[in-house]
Image 1: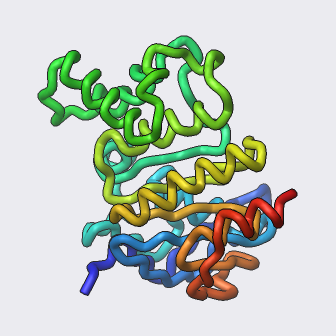
Image 2 (image 1 turned 45 degrees about the horizontal axis):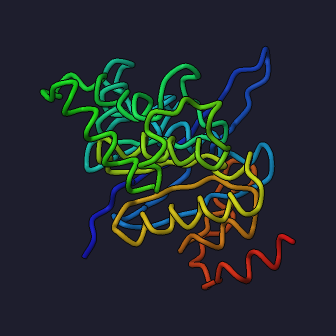
Length: 244
Protein backbone atom coordinates (compact mmCIF):
# COMPACT_ATOMS: atom_id res chain seq x y z
CA UNK A 1 0.00 0.00 0.00
CA UNK A 2 1.38 3.39 -1.03
CA UNK A 3 2.06 5.90 1.70
CA UNK A 4 0.48 9.33 1.89
CA UNK A 5 2.76 12.10 0.63
CA UNK A 6 0.27 14.77 1.67
CA UNK A 7 -2.34 14.88 4.42
CA UNK A 8 -4.25 18.01 5.31
CA UNK A 9 -6.57 18.18 8.30
CA UNK A 10 -9.04 21.08 8.51
CA UNK A 11 -6.55 23.20 6.57
CA UNK A 12 -7.74 26.82 6.68
CA UNK A 13 -6.36 30.08 5.33
CA UNK A 14 -7.96 33.42 6.19
CA UNK A 15 -6.79 36.75 4.81
CA UNK A 16 -7.58 40.02 6.57
CA UNK A 17 -8.61 42.64 4.00
CA UNK A 18 -9.13 45.76 6.08
CA UNK A 19 -12.11 45.04 8.30
CA UNK A 20 -13.14 42.04 6.21
CA UNK A 21 -11.98 38.46 6.71
CA UNK A 22 -11.67 36.47 3.49
CA UNK A 23 -11.75 32.70 3.95
CA UNK A 24 -9.62 31.47 1.06
CA UNK A 25 -9.46 27.86 2.27
CA UNK A 26 -12.03 26.40 4.64
CA UNK A 27 -11.42 23.21 6.68
CA UNK A 28 -9.93 21.20 3.82
CA UNK A 29 -9.17 17.51 4.41
CA UNK A 30 -7.10 15.86 1.68
CA UNK A 31 -4.93 12.79 1.27
CA UNK A 32 -2.64 12.42 -1.73
CA UNK A 33 -0.61 9.24 -2.00
CA UNK A 34 2.81 8.56 -3.40
CA UNK A 35 2.79 8.39 -7.20
CA UNK A 36 -0.56 10.11 -7.76
CA UNK A 37 -1.11 12.73 -10.47
CA UNK A 38 -3.77 15.16 -9.27
CA UNK A 39 -5.26 18.12 -11.14
CA UNK A 40 -6.75 20.91 -9.01
CA UNK A 41 -9.46 22.99 -10.66
CA UNK A 42 -11.98 25.67 -9.77
CA UNK A 43 -13.12 29.18 -10.67
CA UNK A 44 -11.18 32.30 -9.73
CA UNK A 45 -11.26 32.73 -5.96
CA UNK A 46 -12.13 29.09 -5.31
CA UNK A 47 -9.03 28.41 -3.20
CA UNK A 48 -6.95 26.35 -5.63
CA UNK A 49 -4.01 28.79 -5.75
CA UNK A 50 -4.10 29.21 -1.97
CA UNK A 51 -3.96 25.43 -1.61
CA UNK A 52 -0.96 25.22 -3.92
CA UNK A 53 0.84 27.95 -1.97
CA UNK A 54 0.27 26.07 1.28
CA UNK A 55 1.27 22.70 -0.15
CA UNK A 56 4.37 24.34 -1.62
CA UNK A 57 5.33 25.79 1.78
CA UNK A 58 5.16 29.28 0.26
CA UNK A 59 2.63 30.32 2.90
CA UNK A 60 1.45 29.12 6.29
CA UNK A 61 -2.12 28.10 7.21
CA UNK A 62 -4.23 30.09 9.61
CA UNK A 63 -5.26 26.83 11.26
CA UNK A 64 -5.29 23.11 10.63
CA UNK A 65 -2.46 20.73 9.80
CA UNK A 66 -0.37 20.03 6.72
CA UNK A 67 1.64 16.82 6.89
CA UNK A 68 4.23 16.34 4.13
CA UNK A 69 6.03 13.01 4.01
CA UNK A 70 4.92 12.26 7.57
CA UNK A 71 6.29 15.59 8.86
CA UNK A 72 3.95 18.28 10.20
CA UNK A 73 5.09 21.44 8.40
CA UNK A 74 2.13 23.60 9.49
CA UNK A 75 4.03 25.60 12.07
CA UNK A 76 7.58 25.65 10.72
CA UNK A 77 9.29 29.02 10.47
CA UNK A 78 10.42 30.62 7.20
CA UNK A 79 13.93 29.18 7.34
CA UNK A 80 12.64 25.67 7.98
CA UNK A 81 10.08 26.02 5.19
CA UNK A 82 12.81 27.15 2.77
CA UNK A 83 14.78 23.97 3.54
CA UNK A 84 11.67 21.84 2.94
CA UNK A 85 10.99 23.62 -0.37
CA UNK A 86 14.50 22.99 -1.64
CA UNK A 87 14.74 19.35 -0.54
CA UNK A 88 11.21 18.01 -0.89
CA UNK A 89 9.45 20.12 -3.53
CA UNK A 90 9.86 20.93 -7.21
CA UNK A 91 7.99 23.87 -8.76
CA UNK A 92 6.86 24.50 -12.33
CA UNK A 93 5.24 27.89 -12.95
CA UNK A 94 3.21 29.29 -15.84
CA UNK A 95 5.80 32.03 -16.46
CA UNK A 96 8.84 29.68 -16.27
CA UNK A 97 10.70 31.95 -13.77
CA UNK A 98 14.10 31.44 -15.41
CA UNK A 99 17.03 33.81 -14.87
CA UNK A 100 17.28 35.78 -18.11
CA UNK A 101 21.08 35.93 -18.51
CA UNK A 102 21.74 32.42 -17.25
CA UNK A 103 22.11 29.32 -19.44
CA UNK A 104 19.71 26.39 -19.32
CA UNK A 105 22.32 24.32 -17.48
CA UNK A 106 22.93 27.08 -14.91
CA UNK A 107 19.20 27.63 -14.36
CA UNK A 108 18.69 23.92 -13.70
CA UNK A 109 21.67 23.81 -11.32
CA UNK A 110 20.37 26.61 -9.05
CA UNK A 111 18.59 24.35 -6.49
CA UNK A 112 21.76 22.29 -6.07
CA UNK A 113 23.77 25.40 -5.25
CA UNK A 114 21.20 26.39 -2.61
CA UNK A 115 21.26 22.93 -1.00
CA UNK A 116 23.47 23.30 2.07
CA UNK A 117 23.86 19.54 2.34
CA UNK A 118 25.14 19.22 -1.21
CA UNK A 119 28.81 18.21 -1.35
CA UNK A 120 29.18 18.05 -5.13
CA UNK A 121 31.80 20.10 -6.94
CA UNK A 122 30.69 22.72 -9.48
CA UNK A 123 31.70 20.33 -12.25
CA UNK A 124 29.59 17.54 -10.75
CA UNK A 125 26.63 19.90 -10.30
CA UNK A 126 26.83 20.96 -13.93
CA UNK A 127 26.89 17.32 -15.03
CA UNK A 128 23.78 16.57 -12.98
CA UNK A 129 22.04 19.55 -14.60
CA UNK A 130 23.01 18.35 -18.08
CA UNK A 131 21.78 14.84 -17.31
CA UNK A 132 18.39 16.17 -16.18
CA UNK A 133 18.12 18.37 -19.28
CA UNK A 134 18.63 15.23 -21.36
CA UNK A 135 15.54 13.69 -19.75
CA UNK A 136 13.40 16.56 -21.11
CA UNK A 137 15.00 16.47 -24.56
CA UNK A 138 17.22 19.55 -24.26
CA UNK A 139 20.71 18.05 -24.37
CA UNK A 140 21.47 20.30 -27.40
CA UNK A 141 20.36 23.50 -25.61
CA UNK A 142 22.35 23.38 -22.37
CA UNK A 143 24.34 26.53 -23.22
CA UNK A 144 21.38 28.61 -24.43
CA UNK A 145 19.91 31.48 -22.41
CA UNK A 146 16.09 31.83 -22.15
CA UNK A 147 15.61 34.35 -24.99
CA UNK A 148 17.27 31.83 -27.33
CA UNK A 149 14.65 29.20 -26.44
CA UNK A 150 11.01 28.81 -27.41
CA UNK A 151 8.30 28.95 -24.74
CA UNK A 152 8.03 25.17 -24.76
CA UNK A 153 11.80 24.80 -24.40
CA UNK A 154 11.85 27.29 -21.51
CA UNK A 155 9.17 25.27 -19.74
CA UNK A 156 11.26 22.12 -20.27
CA UNK A 157 14.16 23.87 -18.56
CA UNK A 158 11.81 24.80 -15.70
CA UNK A 159 10.70 21.16 -15.39
CA UNK A 160 14.33 20.01 -15.33
CA UNK A 161 15.09 22.56 -12.60
CA UNK A 162 12.13 21.25 -10.60
CA UNK A 163 13.48 17.70 -10.88
CA UNK A 164 17.18 18.28 -10.22
CA UNK A 165 16.96 17.66 -6.45
CA UNK A 166 14.82 14.54 -6.93
CA UNK A 167 11.87 16.02 -4.96
CA UNK A 168 9.15 14.01 -3.26
CA UNK A 169 6.48 16.19 -4.84
CA UNK A 170 6.21 18.15 -8.10
CA UNK A 171 3.88 21.17 -8.02
CA UNK A 172 2.81 22.67 -11.35
CA UNK A 173 0.86 25.94 -11.55
CA UNK A 174 -0.83 26.32 -14.96
CA UNK A 175 2.22 24.75 -16.67
CA UNK A 176 0.76 25.18 -20.20
CA UNK A 177 -0.86 28.58 -19.64
CA UNK A 178 1.66 30.53 -21.76
CA UNK A 179 2.04 27.93 -24.50
CA UNK A 180 0.40 27.23 -27.84
CA UNK A 181 -1.58 24.03 -28.27
CA UNK A 182 1.24 21.92 -29.72
CA UNK A 183 3.81 23.02 -27.13
CA UNK A 184 1.29 22.59 -24.33
CA UNK A 185 0.58 19.01 -25.32
CA UNK A 186 4.32 18.28 -25.53
CA UNK A 187 4.81 19.62 -22.00
CA UNK A 188 1.89 17.55 -20.72
CA UNK A 189 3.35 14.43 -22.33
CA UNK A 190 6.57 15.07 -20.39
CA UNK A 191 4.64 15.59 -17.14
CA UNK A 192 2.58 12.48 -17.83
CA UNK A 193 5.81 10.54 -18.42
CA UNK A 194 7.17 11.76 -15.08
CA UNK A 195 4.01 10.47 -13.40
CA UNK A 196 4.35 7.11 -15.13
CA UNK A 197 7.93 6.86 -13.85
CA UNK A 198 6.70 7.29 -10.28
CA UNK A 199 6.65 11.02 -9.52
CA UNK A 200 3.89 12.50 -7.37
CA UNK A 201 2.39 15.53 -9.15
CA UNK A 202 -0.15 18.17 -8.20
CA UNK A 203 -1.14 20.50 -11.02
CA UNK A 204 -3.40 23.56 -10.96
CA UNK A 205 -5.13 24.20 -14.28
CA UNK A 206 -8.28 25.87 -15.58
CA UNK A 207 -8.28 23.86 -18.82
CA UNK A 208 -10.43 20.74 -18.85
CA UNK A 209 -8.41 19.08 -21.61
CA UNK A 210 -5.18 19.57 -19.66
CA UNK A 211 -6.76 18.17 -16.50
CA UNK A 212 -7.59 15.03 -18.47
CA UNK A 213 -3.92 14.04 -18.31
CA UNK A 214 -4.23 13.59 -14.54
CA UNK A 215 -5.59 10.44 -12.90
CA UNK A 216 -7.59 12.37 -10.32
CA UNK A 217 -9.34 15.77 -10.43
CA UNK A 218 -10.18 17.80 -7.31
CA UNK A 219 -12.50 20.76 -7.87
CA UNK A 220 -12.68 23.64 -5.42
CA UNK A 221 -15.42 26.20 -4.85
CA UNK A 222 -15.60 28.85 -2.14
CA UNK A 223 -12.56 27.46 -0.36
CA UNK A 224 -13.94 23.93 -0.06
CA UNK A 225 -13.56 20.69 -2.00
CA UNK A 226 -16.58 20.47 -4.28
CA UNK A 227 -15.74 17.16 -5.98
CA UNK A 228 -12.85 14.68 -5.86
CA UNK A 229 -13.01 12.09 -8.63
CA UNK A 230 -10.83 9.69 -10.56
CA UNK A 231 -10.34 10.67 -14.18
CA UNK A 232 -11.16 8.82 -17.38
CA UNK A 233 -8.58 8.10 -20.04
CA UNK A 234 -8.04 10.49 -22.94
CA UNK A 235 -5.56 10.30 -25.81
CA UNK A 236 -3.28 12.99 -27.21
CA UNK A 237 -5.16 12.78 -30.52
CA UNK A 238 -8.47 13.51 -28.82
CA UNK A 239 -7.02 16.53 -26.97
CA UNK A 240 -5.50 17.99 -30.13
CA UNK A 241 -8.86 17.60 -31.85
CA UNK A 242 -10.67 19.39 -29.00
CA UNK A 243 -8.27 22.34 -28.98
CA UNK A 244 -8.27 22.98 -32.77
